[in-house]
Image (spheres, rainbow, N blue to C red):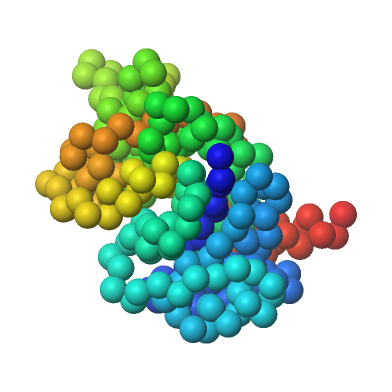
Length: 248
């Protein structure tokens, strides 16, 4: 199977302007994401962007980059545009704000996607912290016994009817969704034509569109976690981690 890792990247960010170009220990954020993905030897790596500044920057550090339409509503649509120009069997949509992503974690998702029955795949990790459980910015997922997602929500699910909130984390298994996706190429090309759905609009979660239109999403458990960069505070935290790693 031919595998492509596509990293959607755009300059427009309200919380952290020009985020992909932010310096982290002498390399830009997008360069660090690209270099981590490039450690997955079975896959090619491509940046998908609608901005000439990012396009030129990726070329300058020797990366592969595709220019895409500025009209896309989501990173998935941007990835789908590039996928339509490739002959790959499996597409991995890797977020462009994960400079510390472990290549082993990407490899886990690729192995999930190599299964014939899996058309869309993603990952989750167990929640043991109450603050995460009730944080609306932390997306939760519930799955069936075959690891297919039943629903994603910003709410804590499942709810424990007869227990206090503080006891929930000890009464059931809760999982945090990790926003890296794998697609069979033909499935990804279908997804870009789906209309928005009521659950997606309510929760502001794109993957609910796919579920509501009848697609299955397999969600495997991983023990790997990463630090995404969404805010200036996140950026400083990652810079400190990189500095600590390089000083050893």
